[in-house]
Amino acid sequence: MSRVEPDFSLVQVPIHLKEFVVEQDYEQYTPIDHAVWRYVMRQNHHYLGQTAHSAYLEGLRLSGISVERIPNIREMNECLAKIGWGAVTIDGFIPAVAFFDFQAHRILPIACDIRQYDHIAYTPAPDIIHEAAGHAPIILDKTYRSYLKIFGEIGSRALSSKEDYELYEAIRYLSIVKEDPESTEEVIRQAEEELERKAKAVQNVSEANELARLYWWTVEYGLIGDCENPRIYGAGLLSSVGESISCLQDDVKKIPFSLQACIETDYDITKPQPQLFVCRDFQELIDAILEYSKRMALNVGGTESLIKARNMPQTTTAVYSSGLQVSGILAELEFDSQGEAVYLKTTGPSALAVGNKELPGHGKQYHAEGFGSPIGRLAGESTPLECFTDEQLQEKGIVPGKRSILSFESGLQVAGVVRYILREGGRLVLIGFDECTVTYQDKTLFQAEWGTFDMAVGERIVSVFAGAADREAFATGTHKPSVISARQSSYSPEQIRLHQLYQQVRNIREKQQAFDRDTLLTILDELDADYPEDWLIRLELLEILYRQAGTEHEQSRLHSVLEKLKDANPDQKQLIMNGLQLLGL
Image (cartoon, rainbow, N blue to C red; front, side, top):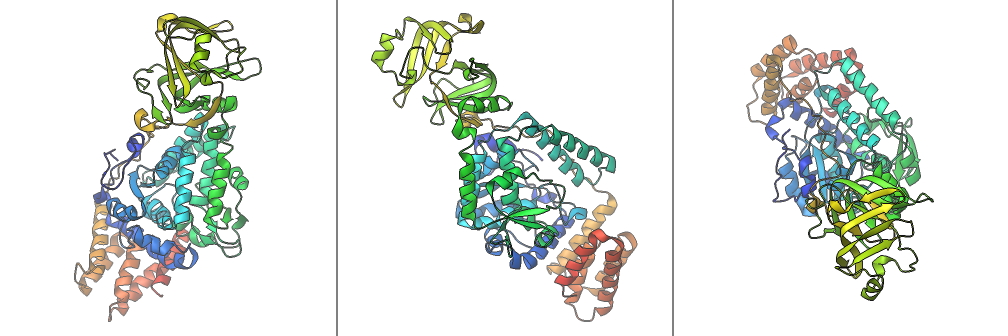
């Protein structure tokens, strides 16, 4: 998939998320792809009308989603724009924090690939059936889409870990090889083993991991109502022909929703879920995500939060009590004897902001090699430095053009010539020093020859979160797109011919080609000779013939072959039975 500049007429994609957007390339979908979509959607439309959340069927229509063909994202956007949402196409799995970030901006990220014919009932890989037909319809419900947006705003700031990202890459790779028809059993086995190794390597469950679990058990696999008679709203269930039916059976345990239970329960993307959580209503979900946010580094701050950020080798933001926000990859921390952080240091391009707006002259170009600064109160002072008046600064000798020595309670010392003093919103946020040295215990943290020392002001860190404060100015997201991509499909002459037969059947069904009994007999003969195991095209043919008088013999012929295929392969038995049942057979 090529990364493209999205259509800005309906969807404004933030600059830091553009790198995840790919071109849909609608013409890549084969007639078999459209048949797979149609089969799943006809089944779901029939079954889920009785078991899904009340918004589902109407939501399909209002989302610009047709039962008959794979949706075009531009057409979906024309419909979603009416409720203030939009959609973009992405390449399979993206990091959870990035996925949440799209939703924070009321954008549905939709994987544009579609599952293989052999995986029609369920695929571990995100595909357009799951993303479009699963996620989009329920956002018709106002409270639910509020939940998605709030979740996105909170989840996009969740701290993850190096192990989380490696686990994500392993999941992405496994989903790709499982959907690749050319993957051998050995390749799939190795990918499964690698995923198991990466999962075991995750020793501490991060905020991002806990939120991914909450998302899984609500947005992906959630039920709503009461445990005795729940309705489906989770996209993973709405997009799975098999699990949308099996999930409501008694052998799948129904558990009343609770925040703690969800974040403590892990999941396996490759298997049906053994239990599901049932919320009372969508407001319960909003209350839960707001409750969870209270325990996040975003709202807790402090040394513990800084340590979490240091373990995440991606861009994070530390917010001083003065309001100054320091964005970059947190690489080093210095601690006092009580284990409290007294100095932080980022590495690589960093930026300073206040109120999520980058300070002029303090972007990635100026702080290209990182940023370091003390945390804490000046020794012997009852007033935090950020609250000093101009008179107090003068009393301490902190005046532009004068040499000053600042001694902190921790023992850290900053000595240099004051170059500037910067206030924002009435608080002191930065003091610049020339000819400056910064020392702590036996370490030199900054040397005079390095240039101006821009010292952050603030007695404590009040918030730490993933990503940059001013994400548009920083222009780089928390995570980068994966370098692992699915292989482009290639088709043999036999497969290309089968595509042509599917298209011919579609043309007849849609009356783009006149019904002709001899043509149908020719197709049947070719299928029996060259494609004896394809059940889906035979179901589509039977659907056409079922409406045509005088074709009883051909109907019987197709029905007989389908019965044999059903008995020969347990995996496709239920699929064929469901197709026949929809025809009333």
